[in-house]
Amino acid sequence: MTFVVIGIGIALLTLPALCATNALGPKQRVRTACASVVLGIWLVGTGALLTASPLLLWWHDPREVSIVDFGHLSPGGLWVWLASGLVGGVGTCLLIAFLQSSIRARRRAVFPAWAAKKVIYDELAGAEVRVAPTMEPVAFAVPGPDRHVVVSESVARLAAPERRAVLAHEGAHLRLRHDRYLLVLGAYYRIWGWVPGVRAVVAAHRRSIEQWADLDAARHPQVDRQALSTARLQLRSCDGRDRPAAEAYSESMADDSSVWVLVSVTATVIALMAAGTYGLTHAIGDAARIMASLH
Ligand SMILES: [Zn+2]
Image 1: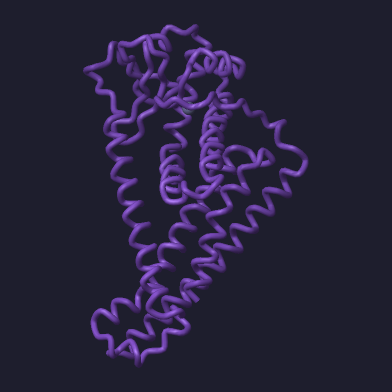
Image 2: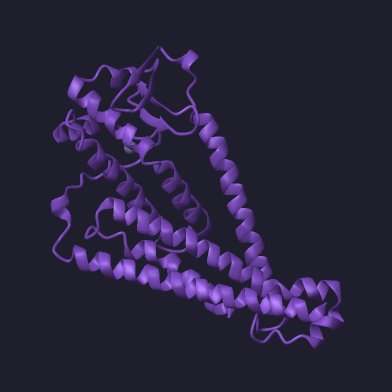
C-alpha cells in the first residue's frame, strides 16, 4: 500500500506542470500548484519512511523480521527498504537545509528602519515603507512580524501614479502572504529541480505570483493599471532578485476552456488527495497492527 501512496504523491507533484496554463487565473494556478506540492511532498516522504520502517525492526532484532509478514505494508525486502530509507533521509535533509537557508535569506532581506533615508507608513502598501539610500531601482516586500516594504530612492522619486502602483503591488505580496507560496515553490525546486522541466514550471508559477499581485493592486481605485506596466519598465528587478519582467496578465487571456480546465484540475487534485489520504490511513493501520502483534 505504501507504493500506492508514493505513486499518488508523485502524481500530485506533476500537477504544477498541468496547472501552469494560462487558461487558469494566476491565483488559481499558484494555489492549486502549491496545494499539490505540499500534499505530494508529504505523501512521498511519509510513504518512503513507511516503506523503510521494517529497517527499524531489523536493526532491533533481525529474527523478528522473519516472523512478520511485510507483504502488504512494504513489499520488496531489504534492498527496497534500504533504498526507501535513503530516499526519505536525503529528502528530509534537503528540506531542512532549504528551510534553514530560507530563514537566513529572510533575515538578510530585513532592512532596518535606522538605515533608511526615510520611513513612512503607506496605506496602499499597508505597511511601513523604508527608503534605501541608493539609486538602484529596487522594490521588495519583507514579510514577518516587522513587515515592511523597501524601495530605493529612484522608486520613491517616480511620478505619483507609478509610485502608487509599485507600493500597491508590494502591499499585495504582503497581504496575500506570497512569501508562503514562494517557500513551497522553493522547496519543490530544491527537491525536484533535477527533473527536466521543473525549473521552467517553477519560473512560470513565480511569474504567476507577480501577475496575481498586479491584478490585486489594479483593483484598488487609486491605482491605474497602465501605471503598473510603466512602473515595471522603469524597474529592472522585482523582490530584490534579478528575474525576467513579469508578463502582464489580463482576465481576457483566460480562454473559453478556462472553466473546464479549472474543473478538471480541481477534480484531479481532490481525487488524488482522497486516494492518498485513504492509502496513507490504510498503510498506517497496517504498521500499527504489525507493532501490536509484536508486543
Ligand atoms: Zn513583485
